[in-house]
Image (cartoon, rainbow, N blue to C red):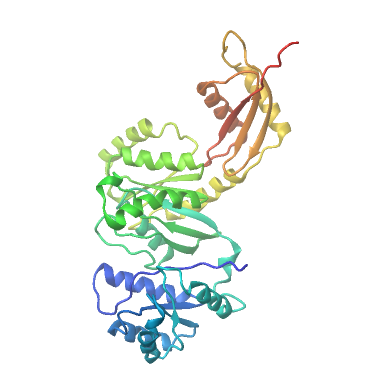
Length: 389
């Protein structure tokens, strides 16, 4: 099979203002970087003024254009579809997205029209995936736009105006990254409607699809329960993590004092996470983001040999043996790193190790091996006792 990326743009209209104009510019940016353009029209409506203007733009395009006549729900609609020949973009392809009709033919045509070498060859090399996550209006889209120097995400002053995840390939100082700008999480899903409801559900999927998450927190406001919930989602997914305090240009001395107390109270369980103070508006300290992301991903990918792991384990247990369990002292027989992404350590024991002792082992593990920026999971496998005959 052939691997490629699909960019789904918002509706394009030349005569709109405000956020709709920003959506139109986003669509134009996507067309400028595409290898094949699929122009979708409505069979039931026919040619609109916007369709005609767009067709004139696409006639000058150097990229192959496929004209798709959607909502072609029956054979009787060929006469309606014939109207689109007037757009001058070749034969329209009859498709009914609702009924799954004609989509495979269009996909075959897309694959046929792909150039031998993509316009952006780095797309197929697999850049590391970064999710920008946080509650609405925390500055995710503004940060992405500052990094790309393009208006790739639609940004408006109203909270929650990013209604779809928008992927951007961003070349920073050292590497190419694939940024996924998520729609902000709403306080309660039941209180939102329409696209905001689905955006809040999608955020978990975006976290699952990413390798490293940049968790944005508004430094000018109190660290909220909603921030904590997003953090917990990232930790449960086991992703590499960088915490970014945005809007630092709005933080005065008084706010900094209270912010330090909030961090000590709410984030003390995450000493292994790098924290970066930035301003997406002014560009302050953005150069610190990439080194933190690289460090987190290297930890996420890191593997410790079984020999090193068991030497460390013996030292840690000798310094502080596990607590008694049912009047028996659990013995750790063997340790191995079962997987990476996230690093998972499995301990084979003769008895259960409580959560407090597992936290101790994690702390000693990090002191020895680092793993800064990545969660570490410690699993316990209790060996069943053999019954005497």
